[in-house]
Image (cartoon, rainbow, N blue to C red; front, side, top):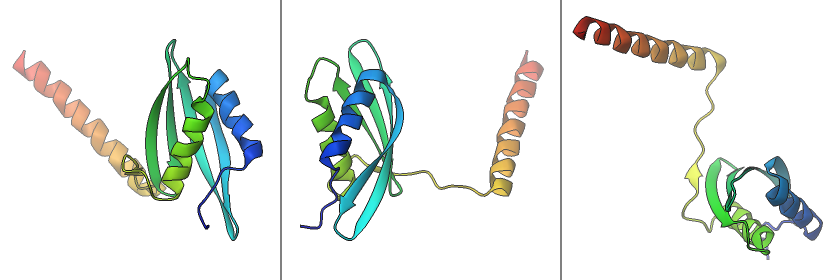
Amino acid sequence: MNNYLIPLTKQDLLHHMLQVGGGAVCPLQRPEQTIYASFDVELTQNSAVVSVELGGHTGELTLKRSDRANHLHLRDFIQDIANGRIESAQPAPPEQSGRLARIDRALADSEALLARVRKLIAA
C-alpha cells in the first residue's frame, strides 16, 4: 500500500486544532516520501471550517463542533486530497513572482480608481 497516511501521533494535532482554531502543518507519510499539508481552522459557535492546502490543491471542509470524531473526518479529508480521491479539491492559485504581483496590484488599484471617477462623473 503506497497511500499517504497521517501518523497516529499527529492525529492529536488535528484534534487540538479543531478545539482551538488557527493554522498548522501536518505530515503525511508513505514508505518512500513525506509530504506536508497546511490547514487553517476557523471556529464558529456551531461549526469548524477547515481550509487545507496540499501539493498544489486546496479543499474546504465544514464540520459540526458537536461531533467527537471530527479529527478523524479531517484526517480522512486530508488523506483523500493527498491520495487524489477528493473531487472537491481545487488547484491552488498560481504563485506569482514579485514583479507580476506588483503589476496585478497596480492594475487592480487603477480599475478601482477608474470606477470611483466614473461614479463621480455620473453623479
